[in-house]
Image 1 (cartoon, rainbow, N blue to C red):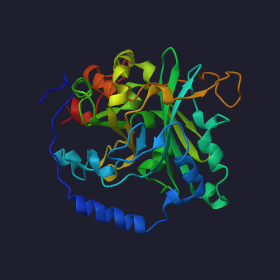
Image 2: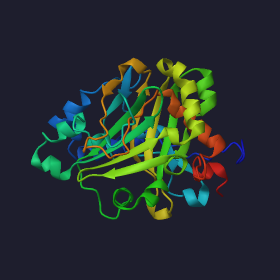
Image 3: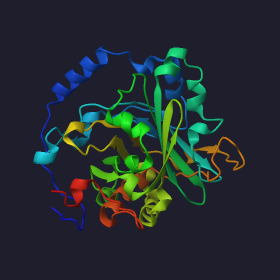
Image 4: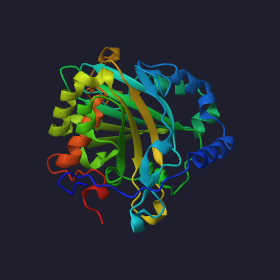
Length: 333
């Protein structure tokens, strides 16, 4: 076990029986309409530069890992420091866009050619009224800028006062203090697993520069990987392994009080052995009114995520930012 220098500690884990989770999920699923049955959602799922593949043996695409694969803060976390398998995700995965561009790509949902918003415009009036989209845009600078954009959706009203509601409606300081990523390496060479570790959690809002764009039916989070020199350097070292690595990425809002427990994922996606060449090219014109003036696209390989997670756990972020890898991993008692 490593102390705060390595920013990794072992925690007690409460096992949860898989059949119980499955039953809960089945009961939950039986009580509401499957958002994936919406025509506009089907259009998004079937499109994009990365195809939707099978979870266990899929390659060159993305899949939907179950929430129970990720360890999160359980009901008694602040008393017993126990993490448990997550019971559910708040949002359904819509798809992943693997993009390449001539500049850093910000606010992708505002781009006139964004396929998700184009499909959403075709939705029924009721769907447009109740659905809410969260897009997470991981931006990576390089000779060619790239972005990996993860789309999630819910068609249920977001409960006023809930943690998700507050995350959507409160200011960036609140969002930065809560926005967390958990990495889980499924397949990859030893060097990748060693560099990143498994179940590495990171408060992205503290470790990297995040920008939040709020629309009527959506929230977009642009995460600038280039804002950390350590993360950026490690990601470029990782490019040589991208076709051999599969990684699960879960996004969540960190619970910081008993009332907010247990933690639930925003959503999770598995990126399976992708190829850099599959990126779709998207031209960015800075004078385009659909994009803020500071826009320029970013993007990179899947392996960078695990690498930068590990790097942040070692170095605690960048510059003056108070980056950390999960509060409990840096000596929280």
